[in-house]
Length: 241
Figure (cartoon, rainbow, N blue to C red):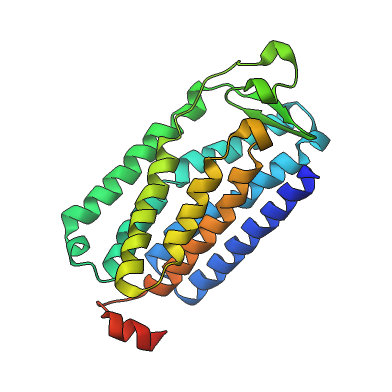
């Protein structure tokens, strides 16, 4: 049953990718491109977990694991730059300053370098939950495929993912207040709540469920505000809606 859930999540993430790709082809903006890049393999993350038990342990699953972890670590912080661009395009004056935008870019680059280094220093170990099988950097006691590997491995800091979500949530709340458009903030809040559900209870599936919702919200914001060239007043925003 959990396998079917992961396949549904993968399908939703793939639909989000197609939506973003079509939007980028129609409106080739930087913000849509930076939103698109992390989405390219987001669907693959849940798909790999859904098919893990059929692939089995070995070099194929290990290669799949390296790909999905490397893509996640190397591209997710790009959404910090997306947050800065959205602030600019939504008409926030302080974000027009090049220094402010430079800080968003510097933070994104820092976390890309900081997280991507893990790919060279961690090992991956099999983890099981219900009927699923995947590789992780550290095996929790509730997801150990055998008692002898419980607790084995190295914990990886989720700081980049948490901070990216919080920054986009703050931007979403600012847009909500100014333009009466709540969906970026709501998507980030759902992701934050989903990630907080203990994996010991339901495994990582709830966190995975939040990812397509979060990314649909980011894509929607990138489409709505990414192409704007000047500040809109709330009154104009209402007319445009």
